[in-house]
Image (tube, rainbow, N blue to C red; front, side, top):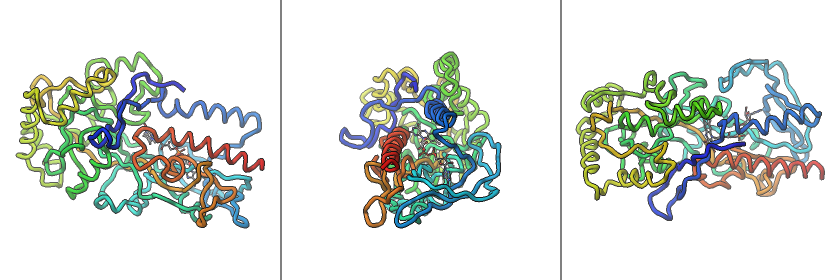
Length: 439
Ligand SMILES: Cc1cc2nc3c(=O)[nH]c(=O)nc-3n(C[C@H](O)[C@H](O)[C@H](O)COP(=O)(O)OP(=O)(O)OC[C@H]3O[C@@H](n4cnc5c(N)ncnc54)[C@H](O)[C@@H]3O)c2cc1C
């Protein structure tokens, strides 16, 4: 597995040295993105299949775990009809028949719950304002969380199910692959963040700083969305989009394309596609026209004077080199890191600087993504039962167990370290399951 050499600085956190968040840049992008990450595992599995060591059963949907005398001994389910849906597109669930497999050990690794908004709402934490009425899905439909109840029915304990990681910078995909498909903007620090009424949100609600704190602030307004205001200069340098199809240069491992997209002039192709076709992207050459468009695109009482004031005050703080505006200080600080300076943070400028324009307003939605609780396990990936002891024969790994254990990785998981937890917990559970079977 290879990595893109410029390490990103995700989730800078809650403002103080001892607060949560990443103190250093540590967001490594896999060379080849998701497919590049899966490749080494898939090729080993293919070899195993060819050598008769493994059997692969696609279109087999588990509906229950088989138990006998307090042990898990296999799984039951439906065999689904073939469906050649492209990657990420929801496939049908037409069952042709049923299946039953017996196994010395079963590992549940069925992923999170973000594609099932009903389950997301059911598990919504009391510590946050109520769940948004509208959300976008940052994961495919198969991320349905149904295996949680199936594991529970087999005796598994679920913990910390209200720990979820929803992004606040979701945009409606202009070419959706799955239902309510949203894309997350991985923002640099310069966009001005306004709530649905047009008021500037206070730190730590700065782009790329504090996902859960910002979610709390947005929902406290009683509305589901917020706005970025930015310039052409910022969008060109600071908008990165999450997802393999949004990063064809990295996914296709093309250095030529990468240099063109990230260092060439204009916005990267996938960002430009959103500017051209995304329903959440508005632009204008002057602030008043932009505000009129924003008002025409919201049900919230967006106060034009509040927006003007936020922009003017931010720009006058830019003129003061001793600024007390924390966002401007953060932008200047970010440029001390060479990786950010090179490809992620635009040189500071006034938002109303005509040469930096046009101006953009981007409507941001809450986007479901990750589950940080789930099936409780011990440090060997053994699933814990209702009596507090491991259930013989049952193991769990990955996002369904909150990236290992049902919370082992903490509520925030330091952002960007989720997949690492999946791989690590998968290896741990795999080794323990093999030992259990041999034993
Ligand atoms: C667009 C996007 C960007 C992301 N970016 C990052 C990132 O930058 N960094 C990071 O760390 N993480 C990132 N993540 C999160 C990370 O990819 C996931 O947390 C991780 O892939 C989960 O892996 P998993 O193996 O636990 O589950 P999954 O990859 O969801 O696999 C679960 C599998 O179980 C199957 N399954 C489910 N139920 C059943 C059933 N009943 N019967 C049979 N099979 C079943 C599913 O079909 C699926 O194949 C991103 C996710 C998305 C969608």
